[in-house]
Amino acid sequence: MNTLSIDGQLSIGALAQRTGFNVSALRYYEEVGLIPPAMRRPSGHRVYDEKVQEVLTLIRQCRDFGFSIEETRALVALSTSDESDCAEARDIAQVHLDAVRSKLNELQNLERSLAKFVKACSDECIGGPAPQCTILKDLSLGASALAQPKGCCG
Image (tube, rainbow, N blue to C red; front, side, top):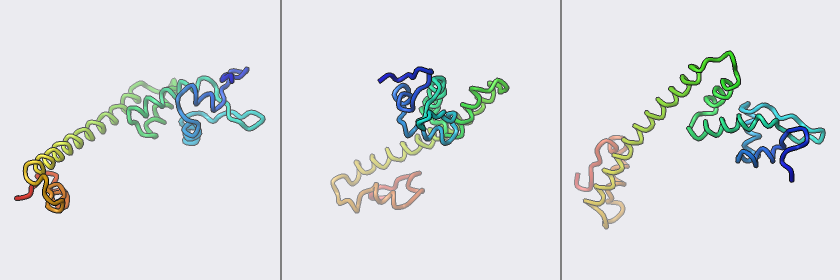
């Protein structure tokens, strides 16, 4: 089946095939305003201009970088606005970068705590009954256990 119609428009299936998005994702992106509404054939089927592929590439990159739908919507709008300044895109990216760095810091703290749990279990109670496991005991203590696991004997 030819994925490009005579008038240069793509069916939703053809657009999905070309971009790697599934049809339901394309419908969702249209619904939330990330891509322009599709034109409709007399049969009611959606058809898209080929230029939508560029927008979908931007959307995929935004998704892969973890931008929210709102951030992605703003970046998509900026990509087509001659009145906007590049600084607006930078500001959105900077806020996201700050959030990623904060999350990375949280994950590093979590990794250190988990490493302590595993070490305490390996050193003190491996092979013992599960109810006496340092990991289970420390986790039951709540947030304070994340800061300093107590271990079997502590």
